Image 1 (tube, rainbow, N blue to C red):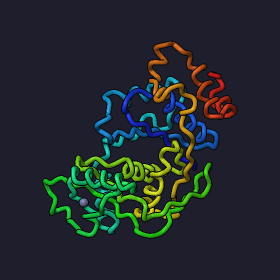
Image 2: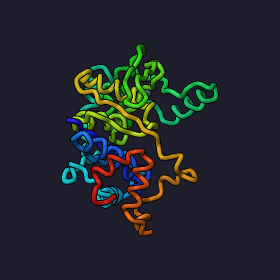
Image 3: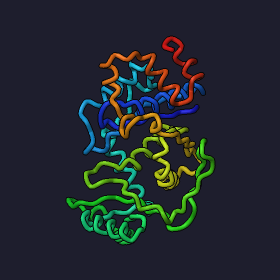
Image 4: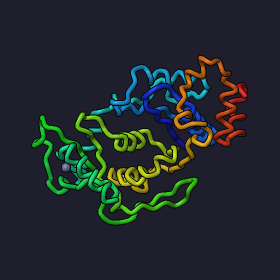
Length: 285
Ligand SMILES: [Zn+2]
């Protein structure tokens, strides 16, 4: 069965761009008799806004976009032990390592690389040190993935076709941060795997992260088993009159009393999904 998900971050209200993404993913699933799951990606604690998760669910429901797991929404901050377990497993398999590099030093390194017009990448100082978790108890450290030094990472995007990345140009991405929270990359791959996601629909801005996710899926030993299909769509940028306008809060629109029907018409036109919307929202449109 086709299973897909919408995974917003609770950094504020659901905005127009987010609502459009949710509608797009929802219709993609429903049109093929699949499942539409909601997941709250709340691992970025610096941008986390209290109460935003509840309001996102409320806004989606108001739009008629009802997740199939409404009573069991996946919340990443409640799964920290699971992510750590997976990160440690990767260290054991030799696919990840503990990094104790100083943050400020890394920032200096990054600036120097940019000045030389090089892509900013971690210097891999700890990559071969084989630091054990017992050695860093009580100390600050992160866990990084060991990106393969050679080879081409290939995947197929349903819209863009075959895409290839040179593995040596992909950074040793941090998987587990020093605060114990996973990065987006680790959490999303673990959750997509555990929920059996078959299709990942997300905005084009995530294209450059996809090779890291493909390698992670492979590191977990899932190669060719259930690697999800990717489909990237354009962001709602051309439709906004000024930068950031697509992030207008949906709740504000509710306050302005714009009818749900009109909002859905706007969203479906912007996504080019007129027919599907008519089928799944017959009472609203
Ligand atoms: Zn390091």
